[in-house]
Length: 540
Image (cartoon, rainbow, N blue to C red):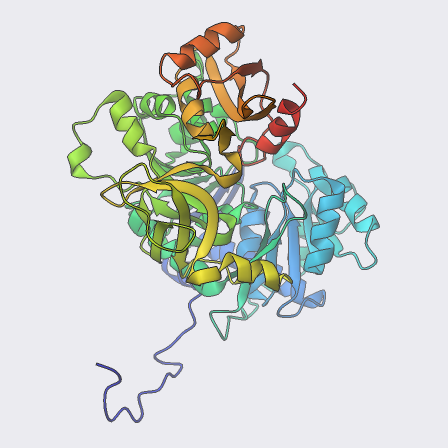
């Protein structure tokens, strides 16, 4: 229809247009939910009024230190209250939040601080030596603010100003600097960098705001949820959940060390209703001895993402009182952007059949415009559940681009979609299912073999805790599947028996030709570091 005629006087103004920002959620919550518990961590309890005041103090303190809008403030923190506060306090002074993975090496941390031009870094005392070493390598290092944690018995070193002292001197009534344009940068997150230097992914306020709204719809959330922050807040900003909680007057339960007992205790004692986590977290809960589990009388909703969880794991965890929804996303998409939305037609499915459907990555979440599987020429793949293509993503919760890297940004957005690098099939109902990362496909004698398929079979073995499959160079076939298997406590590995178990389900050429029993290397978010396994497989 085009524009209406006679639109004089219908322009945007302060009354009818406000740039979208997740900062608005906490501004509102301080008034609507002032006495509701916002943050819980050991003895630390803050209401929304107190939470807002502490975030305001942080913004005020940073401004007093010379941080101006557009500057970068980094954190090297686990999931403690200061990390949640940084998600509001840093952008509240107009700065850009850069949460750094606590497991990175000195060289990589130094690169991130330098590349992002961080002015200040908030650092947990456990990681202060890492930060000091990284800063020593820089010509213009950020100012370090130390964040001790008495609850975790991590006292201050005395070498740097401390977080609480900083807040105590600051203004709780500091006026927040809200974005004038919702496209303004909110956060800077760095990719894992397994194939070179990590890339800086830039988020905008609009994308994060819409992530919080879309997640509420997809997760069927109601008011006052109790959410446990298991996904590290340095990973896609914890899938944006810290920004989302004030929207619902929910309680954020911080979790510094991810253990089965910490999760079961929080569910039983604090009534945790929701959490997100990698499949390794589900596996940990499934394999916890009955004597160490805590009873609870409500269903706990779980978002899981990362490598597709094995059907065997999904089928076991439902029986324990957890309803798992598979989601999918990347750092470049603020976290999860697809969901395996449940269909009534699947209600009758049980056991492995039910779990197999739940392991699909599914359909776009509400804040996304289009996510589908395309051929290299950007045409739609046949939706037959067999034809592979690449997952392509378009929508508001896609990054602005890669910081200081226009070439990589242009390549990632070629054809009007973000190229995920994930290979998938699409079922007739449109649901997507990952086949593999493009780099994880094993090509043996000209045949494409999915490492995910083999891993799913091996995870069905009663003695297996985790399994990862990579390509092993082979003189005859080019490469063959090599399985690395982490066994449950007390079990011993039998390579021939494990290969025979796989061959009961898989075609002969898909079965692993080599099985190595060891603990699997993992990232801080529970993803298995396949690049380490590839290096080892090349030497076998």
